[in-house]
Length: 401
Image 1 (cartoon, one colour):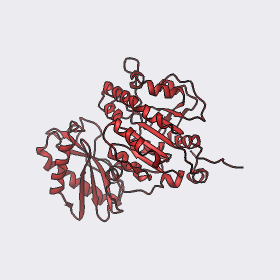
Image 2 (cartoon, one colour; image 1 turned 45 degrees about the horizontal axis):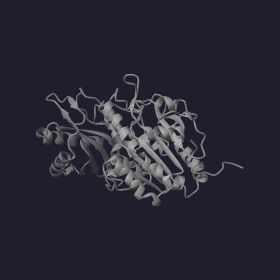
Image 3 (tube, rainbow, N blue to C red; image 1 turned 180 degrees about the vertical axis):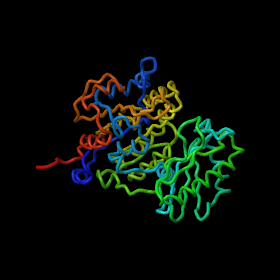
Image 4 (cartoon, rainbow, N blue to C red; image 1 turned 135 degrees about the horizontal axis):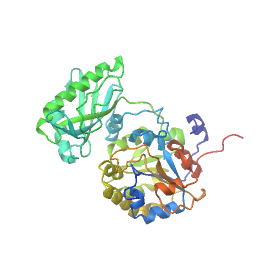
């Protein structure tokens, strides 16, 4: 990846359009000899792959399992090791919460613990969003402040919520208050430095008070907090790449990340068909579209191989709407792999295809991990994908004389 200074100098504004389609966590591992992608009936994706160049991407580095934030940043063309954005910041930005430099934000899960404070379900059975809203309203009513720090609690979808602590002297980052696995004892956050001691004490007081209130709300009888951090400075995609970008996503975290890099968040419905309809309706207003499909990741985390396959097939049925728009560049990939076999994110590289009239075609047979591994792009860092998209949209000038 070129340094930002060089990319800014080379990038140019053009009328050509780029669509980046991310199937979250789409990469998998074989079950009965085939991954989810290889199992799915997806004639449109396969046809696209046959006229594309392919490869495999690593979001961070070989063997490193990435979170959703850094893996998306990499595909957007940012060095994920340089720009560390806490999950809480992404979630807060995603719901449109106006953050200040006095804020510390965390992404929350409602979870289930037993009478020995052992986590038995990290997602509280994926409670209904309406139930989430009720619980958040009760917590907000009963916990408005912790010492001299204001507390703001906002519901997300299903089991997810956002909490913002606002006050002086709240420094991060903090460790996650989340054991990360079921079968382990609840965990409190820890200060990463002497400067973050006050913040850790405030957050842990909140967790203790929340656990008392949540006793009557089984299965959502405890909370897990991740990505507890403050707002970083990050340049926009318009500054770096001369783009007018837009985001089409249904989950707050992805909207939040997109807004932090300067994308306009387009209003859309909850279905894949809604997202493609939103793309068509806003086609004339932007030159870069990030279209995010979430459920491939959700079903991967649930270990639900069949439903992950179904989502891939549902996406495929909607793909002709994108093809009719005839953008200069179409890139299809995942931000990270979430094999249903592992029930979580993994370090495995992501299948990647790029369709453009200016690229050599690989003669791939289909869009799958094995086929993309045969591609001319080989295995490459995900942060280089943006340069490929820009080049194929003729948005980069020549380097040097």
